[in-house]
Image 1 (cartoon, rainbow, N blue to C red):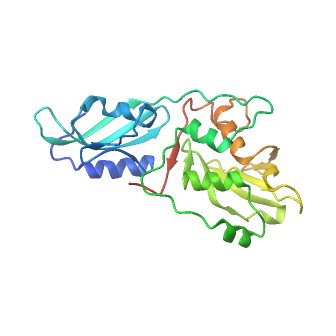
Image 2: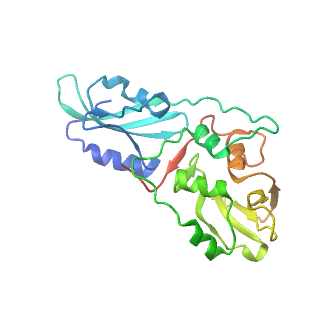
Image 3: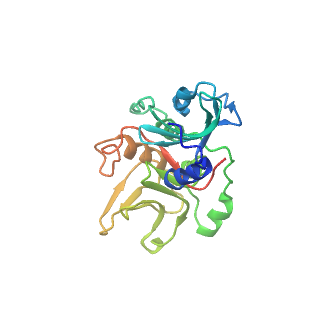
Amino acid sequence: MYLPLDTDSQQVIDLLSSMYGAPRTLVLDGFTDPTLDASGGLDVLAPFEDRAETIRVWAYGNQWFGAGTAQDEDGVVRGVLAVAERALPEPLAAAPGEDVDWVERLVGITGWTPPGTPLPRTDWADVERRLGTELPGDYKRIVDTFGPGLFDAWFWVNEEPWTDLREDGLLIWAGTEHEELYCWRVPAPGKPVDDRRIVVRSFDGEIQEFPGSTAAFICRILTDPHHPYTLARYFDTHWFLSHSYSD
């Protein structure tokens, strides 16, 4: 859709960014990202052929939302909006005993491509020193890979664990808008750090424990409709809404 000539396209982009997080840039100053494919929003450009000037996109569920500028059929540069279907390959189930890189699986499930601005690296040695405990390696990779934001616009991973429940032997590493707290039970000395049990504490104080790694747990709540904390009942296609970084 071409917008009226007096529309400020940057205001439209800023509005969508406030709703859907940091955008991805498909076209900048008339040059299309050469690495772009269907999984990154290529279909948004179809209506504009080769006339796109600057296009940014946001993933939300099974749709791409695009905004920016393009030349109309008369060669006039105007603000534009576009919506395209977003589809990702169905994530493969892990076979029993299969050696899975769950962080890579999480990237595949969400179709995650980070915004152009590099994410700042966390000084994990300093964080672990202040917390007085080592943190799971896959958790640190998730934070370094995705940065701040929410999976399916609902489930967030803390950039640094909270110690509010330390007296209960718990470190809070994630949460939801339903005030559920996702924690690790701090292991006894000598126990493998990556084998910590995950503890979910609901808003009413109910506690459930789950075995397995942090990244595997997130993959399962996104894709397993039978998981007690699943998001698969609400979304068929999953995404990560990035909060703080943009091109």
